[in-house]
Image 1 (tube, rainbow, N blue to C red):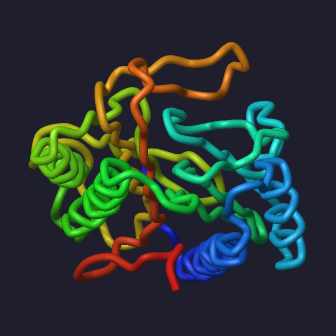
Image 2 (cartoon, one colour):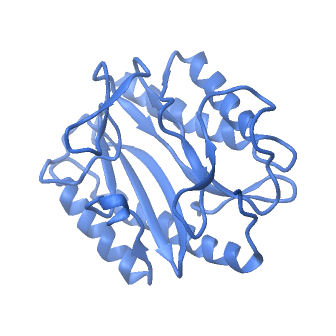
Image 3 (spheres, rainbow, N blue to C red):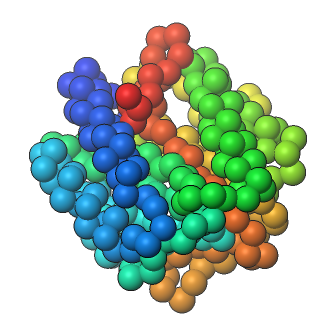
Amino acid sequence: MIKIKSDREIELLRKAGSIVYKTHQYLKPYIKSGISTKKLDKLAEDYIIKQGATPSCKGYEGYPATLCISINEEVVHGIPSNRKLKDGDIVSIDVCACYKGYHGDSAWTYAVGDISDEKKSLMKHTEEALFKGLEQVKPGNRIGDISNSIEKYANLYNLGVVKELVGHGVGSCLHEEPDVPNYGKANTGPLLKEGMVIAVEPMLNLGSADIYMLDDGWTIITDDNSPSAHFEHTVLVTKDGYEILTGE
């Protein structure tokens, strides 16, 4: 069932989203060559706790860390480790925080030092695909309008659209109904209504859309080892559009 959030719930979701946004801003100066992904994870965990929240991902279905940190060909759910970032990497960091029982969820892809023009283009167009999708968020539209807008934009730049992983509702559970795919037909799927909260999150590959999971049971990799980017915001459906809950 898709939940319409009360005013009280929306305020808590705003606070959770703000903490997620601030965590991203806090981490930015540390995202450079030589830092380990485990160090970034520890910085984020300590920061989230200091904000009066808890890391939503840690322990979620057995996930062992605060952040999902995915480098280059890793699409999502990379587990923090002693691996160090290198100049030329792109790294997607997915931050989820729970404040008084309500969640915020946002992923962003960052450049480490100087990156290739191909990776710059991938990041630029994946971020733009997110906002193309968000343009469709308003009462009376349908989930398929978001999905179709993302897919059409990705196709313009020949980017692989990951189909097995989707956006989702957000509330007192980190993942709620409805699913928000990054592909599909316009004017299909659940109707968007004021008070719904959803995470829109295109995951686009520089090459094939095909993916597979590593033996760790979490990390998703592109089948052809091409780089992947991931941009995500949690948004509230308002009376005439949307409000980003995980932005400034």
